[in-house]
Amino acid sequence: MEVKDLKPELIWKCFDEITKVPRPSCHEEQIRDFLLKFAKENNIPVKTDKVGNVVMSKAATPGHENAPTVILQAHMDMVAEKNGDVAHDFLKDPIETYVDGDWVKARGTTLGADNGIGMAAAMAVMLDKNLVHGPVEALFTINEEIGLEGAQNLGKDMITGKMLINLDSEDDGEIFVGCAGGIDTTADFTYKRSYSPENFKYFRISCTGLLGGHSGGDIHLGRANANKIIARVIWECSQKWDITVCSIEGGNLRNAIPREANAIFGIHADHEQELARHIKKYHQEVLNEYEGVEPQLELAIEECERPEFCMDSESSITLVRAIYSAPHGVYSMSRDIEGLVETSTNLASVKMVDDQTIRVTTSQRSSVESRKYDMAGQVEAHFQLAGAKVYHSDGYPGWAPNMKSPIMKMSAEAYEELFGVRPAIKAIHAGLECGLFLAKYPHLDMVSFGPTMTGVHSPDEKLLIPTVDKFWKHLCRVLEKVAMS
Image 1 (cartoon, rainbow, N blue to C red):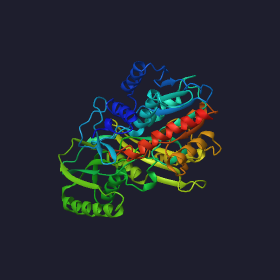
Image 2: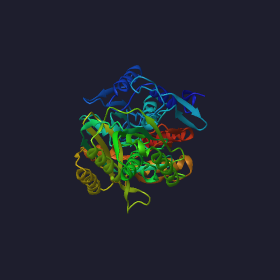
Image 3: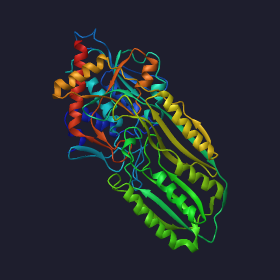
Image 4: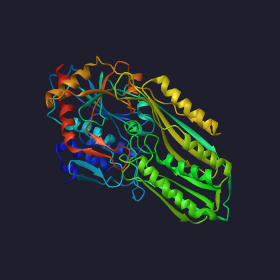
């Protein structure tokens, strides 16, 4: 069975069409054109703003014109992650989806259900002539995954609604009414190139097979960080022998826990056998440490040709020490909501920018605004001690829960009426665009819900088929309840 043949047909057909359109973050031109074409072909009023956000609108079902306008919101872009052995151009190639039992998956890449299924739901509402609803606006924002750019720069008068349903959550049976704010902290290290010693042997060490995942939603699971594993082994080697580091890279996006990392380093030929024994021992130790957490963890080392250049010894060891000792993971838990991470930091990526610069990217999240800046300050101080030039992004605010929210009440009632179970009311440690919308439109009454997906921001991303049907029925019932209110 193909994705387009799944039920309910309307939402899955829209999702299937979305997966065929390249839409990595910062490159939403094709998906924007797709949305505008969709609106034109179906005679749906549509407008855009100067940054590229798109808003479609649909008049109320006759008799419900005076109901509150509901905004359905999703983001256009997707995280572009793939396995190292997969040849996929995210700027040109469609996502290769397939059905595996109760799940929809992609072949070796991110699926883009985050937030393609939210887009599909909003498009399906625009198309469905059988729904009962008040006025509806569908807002599709750009560049959510990299910097929430669309929400930050939403044009004036693009939306008029009083209620907003964010369609970017990942757990059936849960309604979210709050989220963490975030900020990025970047450290640039400079180094000098020198010729690689000729009496050394050179090796490429790589860490692969990690689960990775969302740096907000999965940070509490204790998964391994590939950057930390590679930095640790090189640091341990540096404590035993003279080494030289030629390159070190790992991770990709600021909001993804790094799944893969590698480095090329050299060691005097006299210590080759000792190195082999040490790596074997270290590999077993790491496997033991992450037993039951990282079942596919692989640490491999292979001899490689001598690179012409390496980093100067002082800079390379300073860099390795800084990565190895950098904070990563959960910093504190919420005192208000049981099980919710309050504050965390993600050591996201290490990149060789050019022949003189290595960039380390991190992101901090917190549901407490002052703690967000405190965590970012600690990371800044850490890298300053290592001599790096450190700077921060503008960041984005959190979304404080409103436990008296009418849309929350109606959403919870709708779910219980449909499925006989009271949904959990929660806040999420991941960032949502809701905080930025609230800053611009303080009157907004908001919730977020969606179907179940796992492994988001990694090639293991998958979407649970039965929950999409529930998600669609829930959304339709909420729109009906608002119309009747």
